[in-house]
Length: 304
Image 1: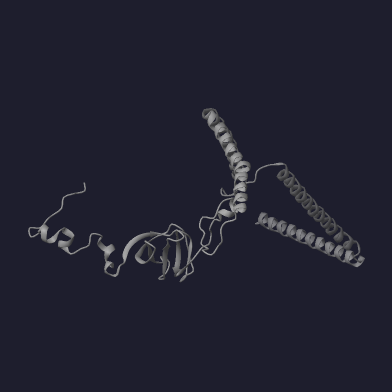
Image 2: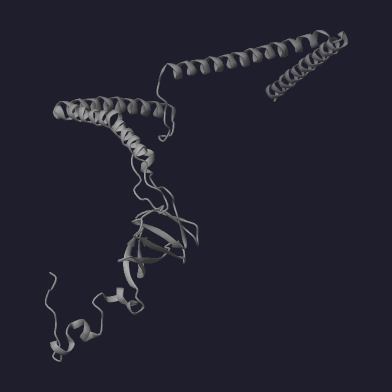
């Protein structure tokens, strides 16, 4: 809990010191009054419009707050003109903004550029807010009447019908909030059911073909189905074409060796047949020799 009591030292004299701040030698505003001897007070200043910093050329949006050095630089009649000197938070540059009581606005004096986005009431069926031209003559009554007529017509033909349409829409939406909420929630449930079914089917397809889970599948419609069929037919034709080429190449390679064998000379056939006959005669001779050797060995064993 915050304490509200104050400590008064034993040597404190109310008539002599007046207050605790004067007793301690401090200002009531604290660190905000550190430059008060120069006529400068540290205040919290909020930018009234968008600007570009003149040092770093960065954009600073409206509403950004700074600890500004506030001081009085003049007066317009009895109204003081204050200057707010701020340091850019994006660089070390300083910019200064002053009040303009004559036109009830702020103006950038140095260190920055203001973004010009003023709204002209004359272009929107209204009157000028400020007349800064002191040498202008008296207003034309016919021009003022014409402007008033245009403003009235704009109100009758544009503004009033727009307001009536907004009121009708508001009455329609607020006439039966329960039924409208029921329709909206029903629509949301149906849409959620459709999305759940699609996610389930997409997950099955991804699991079947080992696709990454982060892959997003397109929605099936007439155009995508037609495109998929065309791609499938094109791929099938390419496969059939490659298969026909492979078969044709296999047939050609099977015909070529037989034709080459038929074109060989008869001498090669004779030499191959003679080689086969000599091999057969050698095998028969070896067999007969083995038979005689085994017979002689058996007879010698019996006689002994």
